[in-house]
Image (cartoon, rainbow, N blue to C red; front, side, top):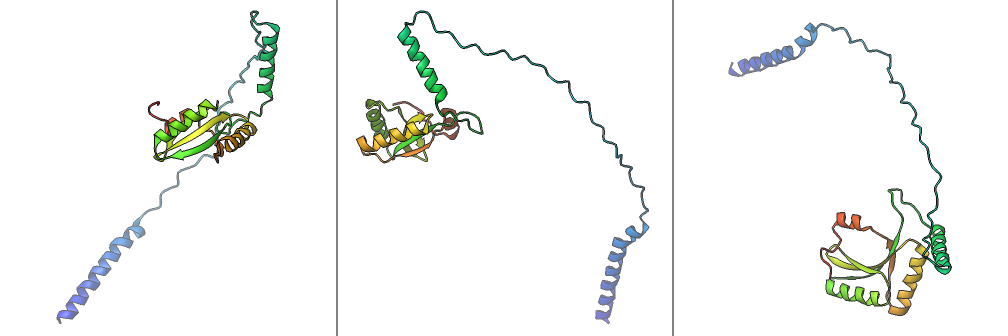
Length: 182
């Protein structure tokens, strides 16, 4: 008898639980749907902005320059305008640098930078992943970077890598700028 009573009580509890779950669904009344407007209200477009762009005027050279100096300035400006300046999609100019060597000890990197500067290469170093990396550059023209890369291989015997230049503000964000100069 004991087992029969237990089975009846479990069955009654199951029926009460099912009733508690499904009875509210049966007694729930339908609510009217909230009306949705199919009208889309768009604001008036703003008035067009009118701007005046003046034609650029090239700067004049100072009168203190002689004719030869003026020709040099004009030639260097022409060379700059003919260079292969490319803009990055993120903004800024594409530039190149030559990765010369990587050292675990920064004093070795500093000695190499001094050596390269004696040979008139614009050398600098940065800390990357606890290593000190020596670079030469930057170069706006990739071809000029390749030429200097070949010279470094021929004169110094350095096998180098031409990579994209990382500007100082990005290097500062990455934490690869040296914290002190040598």
